[in-house]
Every structure is written in structure tokens, then in C-alpha cells.
Image 1: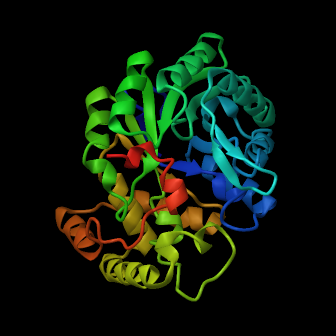
Image 2: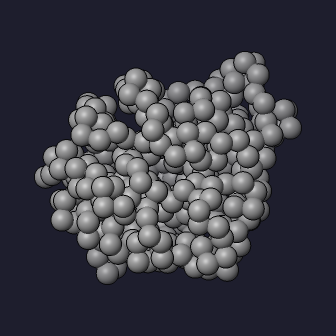
Length: 330
């Protein structure tokens, strides 16, 4: 597995990372045994970047990773942890907390649940509109000084916020959605990151399964996708038509749809690290196959013609959650 550096001053990580959220939350019932097996397989195959959040399953995901770490070499792994998402007992969202005291409180609980002495990359999940980003980042910087955190990351922040945060302390990476059908970062955010030497860890590279090639309009279920705009009604019909166009391109070149979508993100630069949201070993195996793909200029042109920029129908989050995205504010 190729290794790349997260930003100018961040850690060395595998070219693909593993996003662990689905093993605990959002996409329906999870299987603890399969999650642990998938984590073990990922590490065996060379993945060193594991991404989680303290609000994934209300701590469940961190504890799952902690269980996995009992049989894995912690020193060879980079643990990326998001904090600040506020949830109720029923799983409902109630905002984001970036106050300095809260930052340190969240970190204390994460360290305990994971069973580690240090978090490699610590990041606010969203911008708290009531707290200057300088205060939130300053609190993480104090955790670095105290030895509890190694690097600072951001998530879903806009260009101006990124600059303000980076002025307080070097930022290793920005975690943000980026895929064939979510390319908004290319206008201002990605150029800003590149100017400042900040890497991008891209989540949603398969748009929550929508462009994986495995989704169909007959699928139902009460998970996040049951109220995600891109999975609804005519939006879904239009988006699946794009997937079928991509399928034709991928299969003609000996790839699956998912492999073509992941390989496209990989092609955007070594400063962009896709986070694969696999929660099963078969899906992880398919995703790893994207590393064996070499896309020519002609391949890239065909892929982008099948799934053009801004062709997706529907926003990437429901309206209420879009309001929390500093990255979407113009």
C-alpha cells in the first residue's frame, strides 16, 4: 500500500483510509463480528488510517475500534477522530459544540473509549457558529502540548475558516465530501488547501452507496438514506441513470462501478486520500481493487462524461443538516 503524507506537517498514512462510521451507525443495523473482521482485513492489507467520530453510535464506534486495537499494532495506525456532534438518546441531532472546555471533555472520553494514550488527528466535525474557530483550534493545540493529540484536522469547513484555523496552528487535513457527484470543493476549498499545504481526506466517495453500482430503486430501509435528498423519488431515478452510464464505462474497462468512482478520486492527486466506508469484507475487497486501476486521460474523460460535474439531483444532505456545513456557505 502506497503511503502519503497528510499535509505539509501531518502523519504518513496509507493511500486509502477506512471510514468506520457504518460499522456502528447511520446505515442500518451493524454486525460487530463483521466490523471487527473488516478492520483486521483492512490493516492486514496495508490500510493505516482509521477514521471515526465520538458521536458514531454514541461512542459505539470508538469502543469497537478499541476492541480491534487489542489485536492490532496501534503504533502503525493513524487514528482520526471527529468530535462535537451533539445527539439525544434517540439518536437525534441537536447541533455542534466547539467550546474549548467541551473540546477537552470530548477528548478525555474518546481516549478512554478507544483505549489509547493519544489521538493522531483530532478534528471538530462541524463549525460551531457560536464559537470562533480560533478558540476551538486553540484548545486542540493545548491538547497537543499536553501530549494527548498529535495533529489537528478540520471537517466540512469553508476556505475562509480554513485560513483562520491554519493561522492558529498548522492543519494536517480537511475531511470533506468529494466524489464524482460532489465536486464543490474544486472551486475554492481545494485550491485553498493546496496553497496552505493541507491534505484532503475525502469521505462519501461512493455517495453513501448511491454510486457504488449496488444500489437500486427497489431498495428500502429506515436508515440515513431514507431521508437523504439524492435517494428520493425523481432524484433517485436521475442519479441511478448516471450510475448506469458509469457502469457502461467501467465494465468496458474491466472495473466495477465502485472501483471506477474510487479510482477517479485517487486520480485527483496524492494530497487527496479517499476514505472507504466499507463495513463488510467483500465491499472492502472491491474497494481495494481500485488501487490496481490506472486511468488514462481517455478513461477519465469517459468517466466524467458519464457522470458530469453538477449532474446529481438533490443536495448531499437534508436541508436542516446543510445549514451546519460551513463548506457550503457562499
